[in-house]
Length: 139
Image 1 (tube, rainbow, N blue to C red):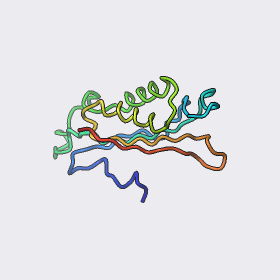
Image 2 (image 1 turned 45 degrees about the vertical axis):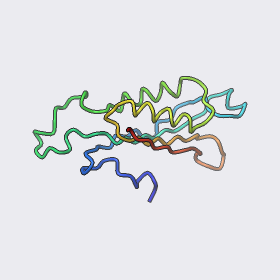
Image 3 (image 1 turned 120 degrees about the vertical axis):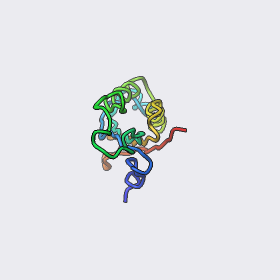
Image 4 (image 1 turned 30 degrees about the vertical axis):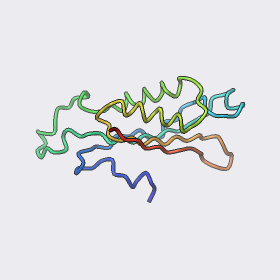
């Protein structure tokens, strides 16, 4: 079982829903080596959020809540913020960039936990990727 599968982000007993963004590929200015300062490189980002679910304790369909964007964490908003952070300038470490993305996600108090997997896709010719996975919690 992969580490990503072990923590249940959607959990009725904790009243959380799982919101995610998968395989977002962006060009980032990242790395410690001189050649990494000269050109952007591809990174793949996966984000998992445990979000407080205001409808989890309701039993009837009618009681679930309004079909209203304001009552949920928007993955469009998260993706937009990720693009802003990645495009903001050079970062030396994938760990630093992953931490910044975690902080941005946790700015919404409904987000109870966030997991960010950051992968550099073109580091090694004989590997699909190299990177880091970071998990942080609110509170």
